Length: 331
Image (cartoon, rainbow, N blue to C red; front, side):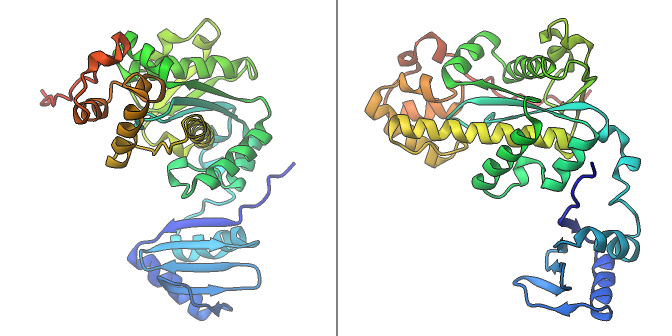
């Protein structure tokens, strides 16, 4: 079954390409339209083309893919891509799984590692759905919606490893390293997904540490999988799908904390986060951080110091701090 056509495309254009697109839209059978912050914008009955002042080109509509294939690529971009993705990047359409995480840099909430499977048809369908790196999804609502669509499409061919704050603090006290914990979590996500797709030959993830750490954490079945770590791995649709699943699970966990304690749990590690943590400790005592936060963060010391408390109030599992970053000059 053919995957549905994509209906939205975004391209950053060089100055020369912006001139070429402007000429195309002014000379072709396009109706000019007014769009805020656009250099030029035009439409047909089934497609809109917008060139923003930033140089970003957005093509949307039922025939967007047709415009990209027959107009934008040959006349403006000077290369072909849409409709030839499988030929240009066959690896992305071969069976594999993508692994990604969410919550690593957030004081509150869990660390979530997710895995998503893709083959030729699934990859095409997810691309048409608009699956992309969750960091490029503007709203939490959209992330939840895409996550629901991905879960529906994949059935059981995804896995989620949720390391809640209490388990996270225990594991950090054991591993003393976020990368070691990530290696463990990635290995579990791979193993869990292999139960559903036992013949999957490759697992792709972002480059976060020593690949050998993940290999050592894998069980017998997982050691047969080729592990691929690369920068900007989220460009792969399976990794992008995993990033969305992980983000949605993380957001749901924050919502549950909000329901359990009647307070907002902001993302990140900002001043707003510190203020929320201070209020939480005032109401429930220092031990509440072990149940809601990643206690090795420097944020913990800042919150406790503000309230004239010591880390000893957190007990053994809350005593471990992140190692300070040391710059090492290249040899």
